[in-house]
Image (cartoon, rainbow, N blue to C red; front, side, top):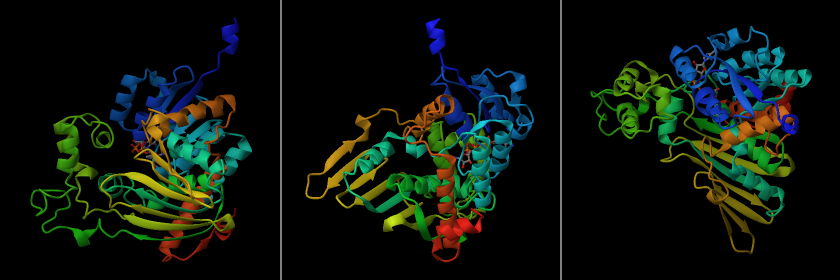
Length: 433
Ligand SMILES: NC(=O)c1ccc[n+]([C@@H]2O[C@H](COP(=O)([O-])OP(=O)(O)OC[C@H]3O[C@@H](n4cnc5c(N)ncnc54)[C@H](O)[C@@H]3O)[C@@H](O)[C@H]2O)c1
């Protein structure tokens, strides 16, 4: 009897989009919390994705839908909807889901358009729905440790942050030259889609709002000017660099397959690990294209400067041209600075006039699955927020997420205007905020 009274209700979830995020990340992670969260419905147009999903999750036929739109015609099927479709679908699906009464786990970007971001935030607030935008980095032990150190006041007031996102040559080629996010006309700008996480995280770490933004950047390398002699639209042996090109997809994905690395990014190219499927995918699909002769238009390097309230500054660089992926940062305060590297799980606290203190994040956690452990920790924070109404320190409300989206969009506006400064109050006023 007593146990029953203490039992907490499970959060039920309907997932829109069973791709990398909806299926392989979030649905899989929900299985780690069997008493707290359960997937009860899903929508996905790709029959292969749906078939594989149903092999793993025992969903009845009448809870599987071909599209999110179809699923949203039904009365509310669950407590929450996870919106994990592609960037330009989020807005309409999110509005419909809020109106149906769902709380939302909403993949970033909220929308590719600032007015629509504003509408989502307003609607969620009006209807009293919870919306958690997938700023997964906030939930990692790495960033939470940084936040605690900064909030303790140990390094004094934050005056300047220098940060870098090393996208890495192969990730750029996979996602931003050949993949879903290669062309901003069909998705969104690089700074929004890839780096809205960074805009969010540095505003959160500094605990300050952004007053002005400027940015430069371009697509300089992954374009015809750098195509080797004889390059063909699809990677082929007639290209002079076929044997040596690091972007040769037959070699890159082929080696992943041979090495048994059948998870991301290979699982985006082929749903089942077989040489024949890979050959076919590279012959007909987007991942077999030459990286220099494609329809990509998103930048391969960009710098963004932020002026924060009180005069603090952030200088952020994203670049494709790195051998390994990762994020590094130097957070400089009035009493000391923090030098940190997410991929090395290393945090050095350097107080002025004192010995450096090294923190090895691998000593604090052993869960680094999915964005440094952020994906899974976000799901457990979601349960606490949606079910128990507890807002963990790292949870970002939709209003805060919208703000960092505006900063990313303003950075893109500045870049397109040759680096002109965009003042955030004017930007927000322009969109009726
Ligand atoms: N938070 C993060 O760190 C992070 C990381 C990667 C991607 N993302 C974002 O997550 C979203 C999904 O990315 P992904 O990598 O999973 O892409 P994906 O292409 O692997 O998955 C999207 C899925 O949506 C399905 N779909 C298309 N139309 C649909 C519809 N009408 N209804 C339901 N499903 C539909 C597609 O068939 C596909 O399976 C994107 O917006 C992306 O920007 C976020």
